[in-house]
Length: 474
Image 1 (cartoon, rainbow, N blue to C red):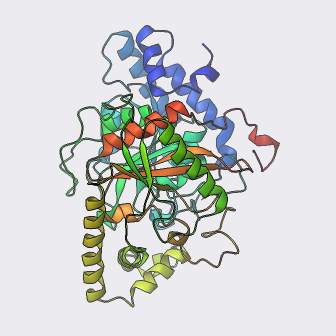
Image 2 (image 1 turned 60 degrees about the horizontal axis):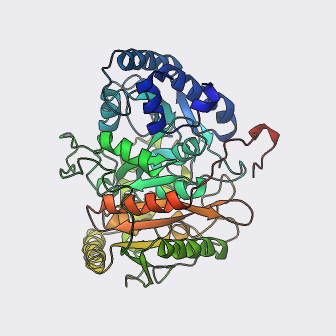
Image 3 (image 1 turned 30 degrees about the horizontal axis):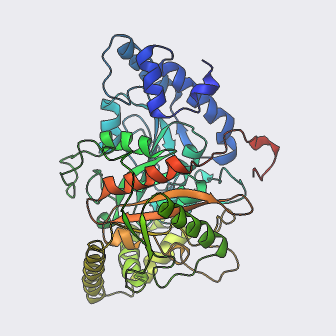
């Protein structure tokens, strides 16, 4: 079997080959590294590639499979970590000139769990500075490009992971999501991205606004996301927000069908403005879910835009980060992050109190809504991918990324699970995703519906595109 073939396979296919001896983890790892060599110079998804460490881990995995001692179902599968995530022996620059490039001396929970499962860590993927915005660029590593058109953004803040997933530069990719940072780039890059229920995937050290942050997978398939969650979706005492109660098998409901599933289709959540090409793709996806047997009703959950609530928390976290840096380091910070921090200086303790009170009311409304409907369906993002090195679509008059991504952060405020599912392309060939959100701990249900949709309407990926032909690859 050729390396090129191995480079296009998912984790389930690789495990079967490892079990049979038809291919080895070392061959699969070299295939992933070859794809990084082929694509990464143009998309800049990886900022660190640990070739020596990956091959050593793959050789050890190859011996285990040969001897019948595999550590898990993803033993030997190539994976990546977001550059906000600490992993022993690799730097975590966090997209910031203020951070050291010294190798980390500790593992975050996802890194430890993946390593203990035998997964092969290929390296670290790009992020904006401290993950502060929904595109992916920084002054150390530059911008990550969209694999469908390298003139455009892949979204963020897990844009490196999403671009890597779209091109299968590794199979399983870890992202983080405090306001849409998994779902936004998943939509822009045409892959599956999942934000689990808050606390079900442990994080440590915690992000600055810890109550918004969820870790989760970006993958080509829902089954691969479940395979990754079976490893990283486990309790870790170091995370003070970590919860127990995760499914024994995150993929236990895959393949069960969705007949009778009540889905509330909300094209705007009652307040968002959505580009027509995006809206049409999502509307067609709602019709397809109905064809698969779901009971799809167009209805809004009934709340106003919570952007002020979110920004009160988000800007205050930026201010805390800003003030933790000395004067010289502050001059090295992203100007947009600093601007957010300065806006928080106008907020009071009472502003924060009322924001938290309104956040609780929003969560209550959504949890009540989920008693009538199994899931809520919306667009993942309100706009198409737009040019690189812009925080908002040029010419729109927008100021903040939350304005063009109004569907994602409400479900960080509520701490509920949500996914972005690829559902087609605009007339110009750019991916579109729809979001599925559920009540707390309804993760398996979201995975089930997402799997049913993608099984019936498979996505496509930019595998055979020759990125050397020019900036536009669609």
